Length: 161
Figure: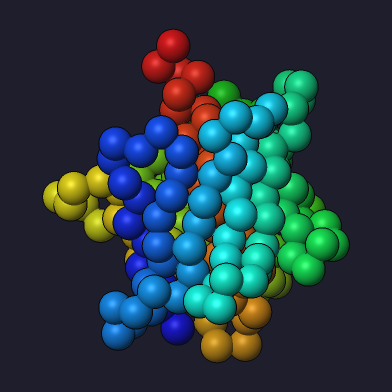
């Protein structure tokens, strides 16, 4: 299954839709504007919360928690490295690798493909293709990808200051 995510360029709070292969709205993502740390709510097409992503405030390295059905299912942590960014996904038996600066990376469970994300270049705003394996719960894959994207955005904002 492929999902398509396009983030708005001029938005004070994170608000965007995630579409399916037919161009229909599949999920709606909304960030909390006035909160300590970044918080993202992911809603399905019926308006039910499919996932919640929350940044841990007061952490030396960027750290985000992923909640599905009110239960913490994963913790995404940016590892301390000097040359190439590295992330760990705790709680799920998933590993992530690729080129994070170019938004081209893949997630595996052991040797089994889980999800890949690739950035579409030359588009207005940030546009991504999320390719999810058939055997994977798309809510988990989508929430982990959004959490990694939030960590990358935070690291990029910190580097530019």
